Picture 1 (cartoon, rainbow, N blue to C red):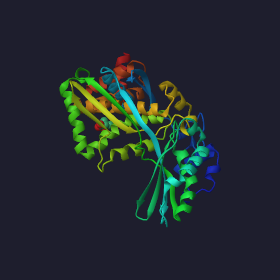
Picture 2: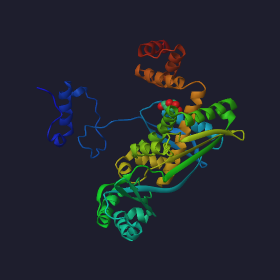
Picture 3: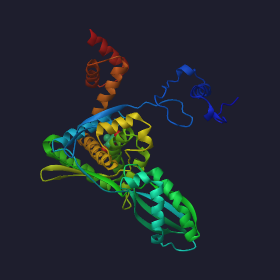
Picture 4: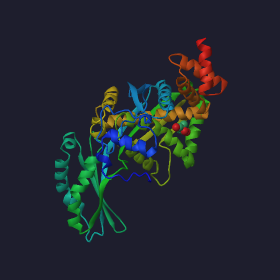
Length: 405
Ligand code: MEV
């Protein structure tokens, strides 16, 4: 009989029974599925266990004259080393200076075929009352409705509400708000509310970070000039701009994951921000000025330090404690600095030795561990393989035997 995933009530099975169904579907033994149990099960539909991801800390971060260890959860082995490396270079110029402007998220109510125009100002008191009742903790923390606008496109009238969501990421609060206020606009315009939801654009929730680095710290003036040139090229070449930004997001997303934030929201906001003005551009810029290499990043930071993702994951809470950030805006500022550090490390490697060398060392360490190396033998085996230019488990085993004598 054909195997199928069309199983009514699959979600009602116990976790163990679900795994058995999968084993049967795959034609393998249950025991061969390496699924650790979640130490803290989440209310995830059809859960089958727990997906581990490497968790490290980047060091050398000096942000607004304060020292940080940066928690990073990522599947890419080079990310933590690169972030530390970027932060170390920035540190010799005094680290990162950061800041943030208004911290507003946008809710959209899209009305189809409105029969009448909408004078939004007439409804602001009513909307404010809903804001107060729907998000009392945000209002108590100084948040609330800050700006509004209507926009007509084709047969659609969009109501845009910008809300300061204080220390939450804000998606749930704004989805709720959009749904609660939609009937007001339907009855005022005679249109149908087709969509009532948050927009992930987040271009009014930005943080920035800057750094100014002496040439010595990055290998000299010619390296600094090449880093500038690599950025300038990214501004005229979208293929490169995408990769430039991917490198930034390596750090940003690792920090977002470690702090229990919605990584897709941050990615969506970052890439839409990179497209402002109609063309995809780098999120950061480097230039040589006054005998220093100066870098700056501007980044949308739709992040929270309270709410679902943080509460349900004790490691996210640990990460925030390690960072000592209490406000979402402060996490956003740190995130901008991490993105800039990650970008600097990538660019420096790219314009000098290339990125493979660093990656090769990390791959060699992983292979050395797979071959059974522990302690300082890991680096000794890895170094030997890098020297010989062959990274393989059988070679690692041979080197290990030789070293153990
Ligand atoms: C690799 O994950 C990221 C880089 O490609 C970024 C870049 O090219 O700037 C190294």
